Image (tube, rainbow, N blue to C red):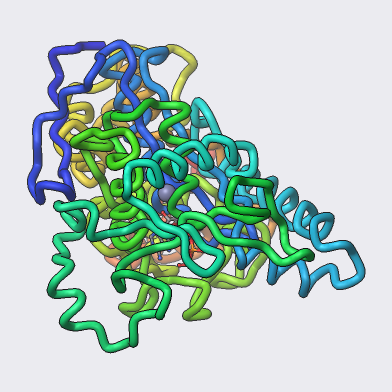
Length: 463
Ligand SMILES: Nc1ncnc2c1ncn2[C@@H]1O[C@H](COP(=O)(O)OP(=O)(O)OP(=O)(O)O)[C@@H](O)[C@H]1O
Ligand SMILES: [Zn+2]
């Protein structure tokens, strides 16, 4: 655990890699936008969860496990949730139906994420449990002239903030000039966004000075980050699609309400998981849910272990897009098959792994270093403790494989075929079979039957 290790992180705010210096090294604070709980999460949604789990692990390694506070929220109030509740539970009162949707979806999300070996964030606040904090921020914004009421809504006045648009590098004038859509009549500026809106009788609502209503999306994260991390904190993360408008508007609300010059010092965004070059998303309909991947045979005709998806995800740098495919999962699985199951003794992580991760989470280089270490640890147990510690940083635990009968049969048959090839002195083909099996983590041991003197081959799964 060395404080000497300086982390370099790419900051979307400045568009450059910076040396990371926490505001208080004994409480490093990170907020990551969590899921809106109306439907199963897809494997694209898993990317920020996994990427920021690696960062959480790294921060804990560098600053100490009890010196990092990680908040990932649950958005459990949203019009998409209301629509889903109406669709799925038409007989129930809306609020009851909403509770059913959010509770089951939230539980599903937590189960999904567990399969990826993610640590639990320090806090996982729900939006509906932070309404008072949202109201407080909106009151401040109104009092300071950064917000106004119009047609049953409280709106943020983007013109009231001179440097609005800094994160996404958008300029209000350009936006206005380029606006194709007519400005909604009640808005002062096209970029103004909803902080609060009135609810109809059947919609979920909370009593406020502006009537019974519900929050806009962005205000939730300002309220929850402020409550758990303070007005200014170290790192704010999420997927690339959140830069605008979500994060831009979080910054506007928090900075204007608190009178601060920054909300978070470092803004980090993961790239998209794509299918044939397009972002995996619910609206595109090109998604595979985490549940389907783990528990059904929908993707490639089989189930996939969570750690395989995790490794497949980390085989690309977090800011690059990933084109998702079965080939990629197979590649990760083959690599994992060669990694031994670590012993229980955890030593010091390999400096090469730490250095790679400290360079803006270079998981590609970190995995290469772990791979080399896995090889060494297989040959010499003295390397096991360092190997185990390095795996902890990546959050990957290679499991002993359980082979089903069909696979055992297939391997037996190939081993038998190889023996015949050897007898026929077709060494090239025989070696090909051996190499193939080795690539799957299956080690062959050639010997002689002590009684008959005949060549025999046994095999085992090496992990
Ligand atoms: N294809 C993707 N690749 C990487 N990250 C993604 C992808 N799709 C969504 N995310 C991220 O997942 C997190 C959860 O977001 P959210 O629950 O709002 O997803 P969503 O917007 O419902 O998904 P969708 O885009 O499919 O509608 C966010 O950080 C978002 O940036
Ligand atoms: Zn957010």
